[in-house]
Image (cartoon, rainbow, N blue to C red; front, side):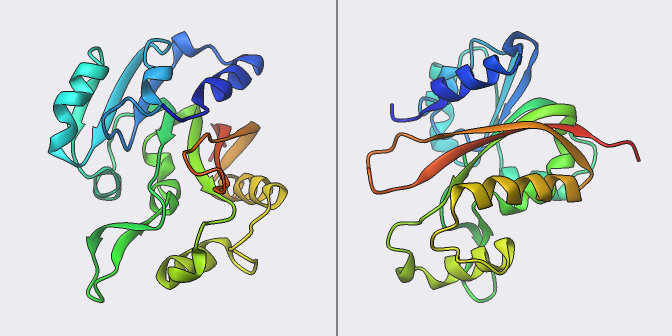
Length: 211
């Protein structure tokens, strides 16, 4: 499958990350064969969340040793304060808007924004977080609601072309502002069927600051 996760794993190992010690969570599992199989047999344990029941059998087939939970990942994080903590959290977030509809009929969730704002609920005191960043969305002008949500999240910048350096620094500051120390960060460009896309895996090694 198209991914780039293997390259990212290699970069994390170069930074000294020992995958055999990681307690992993995949928050948007789908069928598990997109990239989760790339690290499933490398980590200490794996839990996978997926909202759609139709993927359950495929998840169990592709990830036989994982704990599978069919649930709305974002809602679970929002609604609970005593969740298990994980040292490797992968947010293979959808692009654009998704999830339940608001009163204006727009989906409530956008990319990884809601999960990152609550990452302290599921990330261990020290751990790795991996998520998708779309630097230059394809056909962006067609999706004004998505554009508006990105502008709110990223602030005063051109969200149609974020720039790699800007984005890496943006997330470093974002995590520092929610009381995490950034030990290191790295990235790889995702391999996708559309060569025009500029979708990246961003990975940040975080440690919770003392209160």
